[in-house]
Image (cartoon, rainbow, N blue to C red):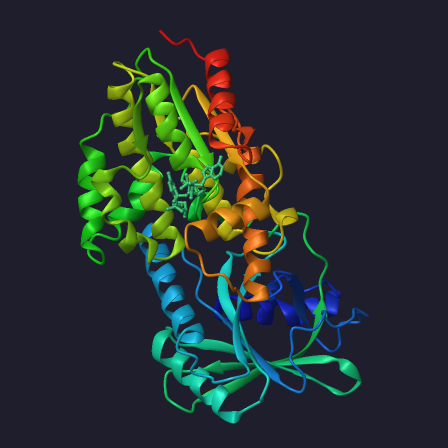
Length: 440
Ligand SMILES: Nc1ncnc2c1ncn2[C@@H]1O[C@H](COP(=O)(O)OP(=O)(O)O)[C@@H](O)[C@H]1O
Ligand SMILES: Nc1ccn([C@H]2C[C@H](O)[C@@H](COP(=O)(O)OP(=O)(O)O)O2)c(=O)n1
C-alpha cells in the first residue's frame, strides 16, 4: 500500500522493530455488509501475538490494496478527489476484473494523527486470476503518479494472512518487492478514522471554506464559476426579517414537499426550497462529482438561499424545504462508513450551525418508520425488488442521516412523527410553530 503510507511504515520500521513499537499506519476496509475491518502490517520479528483480521480475503482468493497520495491544499484535494472517483468508477462500474472481484473502500490512517489520511481501495479477487493483478497494475501505472505501492494479500497455511508490498515504478513491468509482512487485526479506534477530516473534506463550516473548493474547480467544471458568481452577489451577513422562518428536514419521502405546501397555504407563507431554483439546474452536475466538490456546492447553495430567506421574511412567514442540516447530515452519513455507532460523538463540531449562515427560528425533523417510508417510496414508483445487501446498506445510511439530524445543535432539529395522516401532521406542525414563533 501505499505510497507515503508505505514509506512511513518502512523507514521507521527497521528502527522500530528493535524498539518493539508498533508501526504507525493502520488500515480500515468497509465490507459489503457495512462492517469495518481494522488491520495493520506487522514485521515477522515483531513479537506480537495478534490474530489475523476477521477475514476480508475471499478463500482461496487474493486481495490487493493501494492508496492515493494524501492531499493538502484545496487544489490538491480537488484533484485527488476526482482521481479517486475515476478509480472508483473504473474499479466498480467497468468491472475490469470480471466476476468474483469487488472493490471496497479502504482508508489508511495514523492513530497518532501524525500522518495524513489516505484513501484507497481493496480489490477482492475470488478467482485469484493472474489477469486481475495485471489489469490492476496497468490501471495504477496509468492513473497514479509513480511510484505506486501495491499490497497483495493471501491466506497462508494455518490461516495467517500474509502481505507482499510491491513498488511499481513508471516503466511497465518494473516492480520491486518492498517487504513481506503479517497482516494482523487492530482494535477499532474510539473515533472513526474519517472523523478528524470531516471538516476539511465534507462539512464546510463557513462560506469561505466551501468557496475555496469551488474556486479550484472552475477550470474543470464551468458551472462552478456560475455558482460562485451567484454567491458573490449575496450579502455576507443577510439579516432575517420579523416574520418566522420554519425549516422542514427529513429523509426523502418523509413528507416534506406535502407538508411545506400545506404550511404555506395555512400560514400564507413564502415557500423556499434548498437548493434554490437559481442553482438547481446544476445539481445533476455536482451530484456526479466526488464528495468534496458535491458538498461544497450544497454548502454554498445554503448561502444563496439565506439571502432569499432574509428578503422574504421581511414580508411574510417563510417555510423552507431542507437547509443547512440536510447538507451536514448527508455529508456526515456518506463520509462515515459502517454503522450508526461510527458517527462523530454528540457535540462534535460537524453538528454545529455555521456562524456566518442566517439561522431559522424553528427546524422540524419529519420522521416515519422505515416500513412507512418504503411504502411511500413505492407509492412514488420505486422499484419493488432490491438486493438484500443494498437494502441493508440503505438502512445503515438512513439511520446515520437521521441520527446526525438528531445530534444537530443550536438550532436543534425537533422531531415530529410524520406517520399519521397529512391533516394530523399539519395540525401537529402548526401547533408547534404557533407555540414557538410569534405569528403576526
Ligand atoms: N402524512 C402522510 N400520509 C401518507 N402519505 C403521505 C403523507 N405525507 C406524504 N405522503 C406521501 O408520501 C410520498 C412522499 O411525500 P413527499 O411530500 O414527496 O416527501 P419528500 O418531499 O420528503 O420526499 C408522496 O407520495 C406523498 O403523497
Ligand atoms: N440544503 C441541502 C439540500 C439537499 N442536499 C442534498 C442532500 C442529499 O444528498 C440530497 C437530498 O435531496 P433529495 O432530492 O433527495 O430531496 P427530497 O427529499 O426529494 O426533497 O440533497 C444538501 O446537501 N443540502
